[in-house]
Length: 128
Image (cartoon, rainbow, N blue to C red; front, side, top):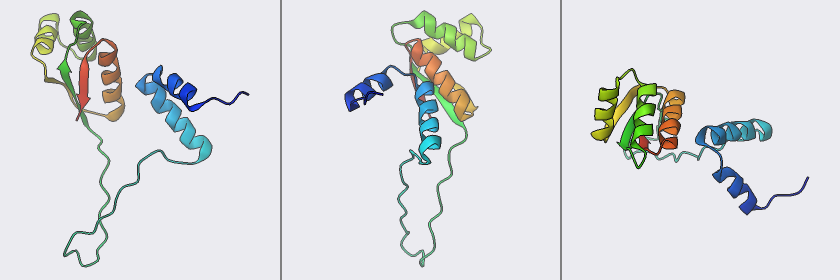
């Protein structure tokens, strides 16, 4: 097997979707028994008396915020209708009045899928 250069690897990763890249990271972590998470800094608060700092809880619910529709507004409206139970008029109004919350309290997997679908249609999306 030929060894790939760093540039070749980056070029391959650029062509992957976020979901494909996430799956790759999971496989990489399992194969080499490592984690890709950045280490959390542990800082003792003044006056804590030497007590241990609490670990931050991982966020389990996400809000999908549509920031803008981009150039392909019709495709974004179609994706909004597919992700929600909104009718054509309601979906169009939501897209026209961006930034707006599209999904609230969604789990991480659903939020990532929604973000990928909307960005694939040309929209700008953030997760909170």
